[in-house]
Image 1: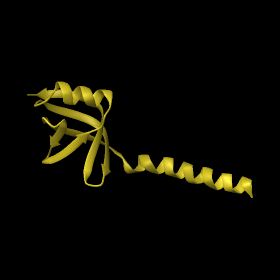
Image 2 (image 1 turned 180 degrees about the vertical axis):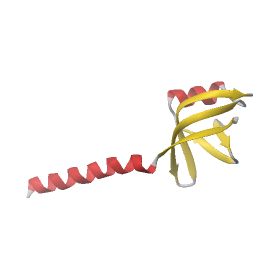
Image 3 (image 1 turned 90 degrees about the vertical axis):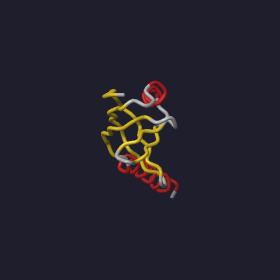
Image 4 (image 1 turned 90 degrees about the horizontal axis):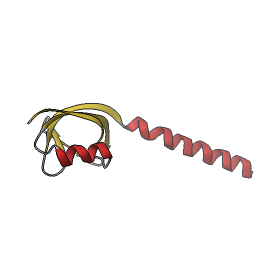
Length: 91
């Protein structure tokens, strides 16, 4: 009995871990970093996830036009992008 309960819990944990990446998708955005530490692209506002690359982008390239490659997650009404890389394409 105890063994099958552990097996069921392990299966559920594995399913939860595998389901999370399925909800995220890789995207490329071209937009501008605003003064609220967000990216505005195609009249959409994207929150920037707290990572080293994302922090570098929003702190050092405010008001610049940038091309961002990252992973998009949607939580409630927020669109959150985890920045993997970016390049400045204009001011």
